[in-house]
Amino acid sequence: MDLTPVKKAKLIDIVTNKIRDEILSGNYVAGDKLPPEREFVDQLQVSRIVVREALRRLEATGLLTVKRGSGMFVATHNSTALHDAFSLILKIQKVDALEVIRAGLAIEPAMTELAAKNRTSEHIACLKANIKRSEELIKGGRTSNNNNREFHRIVAAATQNKVLRLAMEAILHVLNVVHVPHGVPTCGDDALIWHRKIMEAIEDSKPQEAAKLMHDHIAEVQKTVEEVIA
Image (tube, helix red, strand yellow):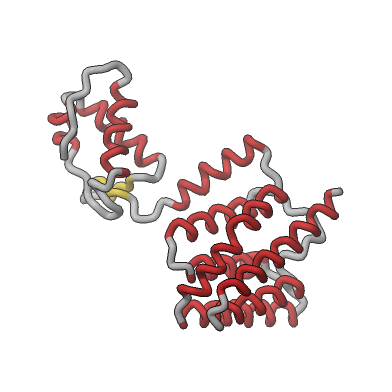
């Protein structure tokens, strides 16, 4: 670790940024244990109180996690902290459902195209199980937003791209925060028909067809939302 001494004001902010940069630059990766506090104290030439507060801030953001009796580690899964922060920003900015759907329309067709190229037999099995579950719910006179969103989550997983998976998780999380107008077909018969077609295109490794189907699916939802709120 190559860290230079800190000799400026706002030491806590500076130390926080330095340690964060060490993590984001790849010097420490998910699951790695950080050096003891005294090592940061010696290298940065600051007090233990400053180092402890900097680490506490990074833990609060979800970048670090504490394991009792073992020390401080780089978090292996930070989506919860990311989603919480993202949700707060969205509430402040007053983002609505239509904006979220438009974001999905920009991202999901390309994501689905990649899924059709990279999917495995396991992904297909998961998609089929999801569709079967939707069929059972509908036959029983029920629907499930969670099951519907899980379909999109599986498609994202089939891309085998971590960035796209996180992007999809963010969009799905936002849908739990914003108000979706009543009457929008997010999880009924219409959604099931689209999902079945999309799954078949992904299974048959037809990227362009899969992308178009996902585009048309989301575009239909967008049109309905626009009509409902008009």
